[in-house]
Length: 211
Length: 211
Image (tube, rainbow over all chains, first blue to last red; front, side):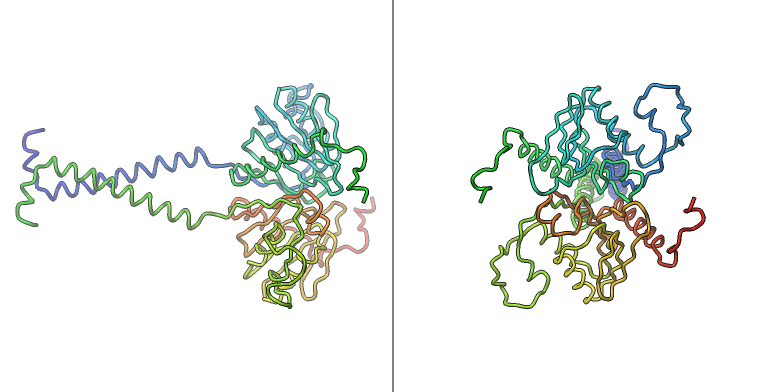
């Protein structure tokens, strides 16, 4: 120790204690704030109808860059939805009542070419070369409209993946990363995926169904 | 000060400073944990189809209690949806593509009798005595299916408010209290409410629309 320090009165040390306590607390607050910002789950809402904008650059389509087509080239709800879907690196679960939008179809084919795993559940069956699609034999509708990006981002709402819905309807889409939503939707996907296993199809009515 | 305290060595005071700092930090963590638990936003998912259960008690219907009807009296996604809606004390905004479920209709009428403010936006117009309903003249669908309880709880998903959807379809409903979702949906409601103001109706095509 330095000479003379022993002689400092105890009440100075009390002040130092309080000061150190407050400094520790401020540091903890800073670290926690940084940690929370770094890990803040994405929470976003998109409303439709979406103005028609050019999505050629997003979808990596061949042609001049910047694209010379007459459509506006700004942001739009559809462009934001496409960007979220195209952020998939490993997997994209799709569980869709209707799927006929050309732009969303091109996004799915682009992800497929990049090697992203793409299991698709659909009420009416869309066709994609090389992508496994399971659909149902139920009387009720498979009315979900959700996608799960890399098992951590849920995209769900009222929007069917059709041009009519995107361009003409009032619709909503939520982008969600909170585990309280993502995990039950993943479990729902797995449940339906197993139920729609073609091995379980019945092509002729069973005795029970004939009654 | 107490006699003798002045004589304590300074390094003891250093230990006391660290101890006090750590104690302050632990207290702050406890208070913050309690505060976060107290204010944790509700995050819940309901999946349909819902088994048919008795909702008479929930809907305050006259009759013996417990109800003697042959339906199961346990919990169900529909019962949980009804409970969330019936928790409204001041207001319930409804923005619905389709609304024909008798149970959900009775819940809305019960809230109306309790004096809850009930503005309704609908694509096809349901009729409730004394409740103001606005609908559209647009060519696209008003395809939302959401409700907002007391301006702080959003209920939204794929579920149309029909018996077909509740009992037969694969559907989802999210219960959400995060402001990042509730506020944009409230703003969307206000925007559509103004646009659907009957004062803006055009009963004959305008010159622009004839082109």
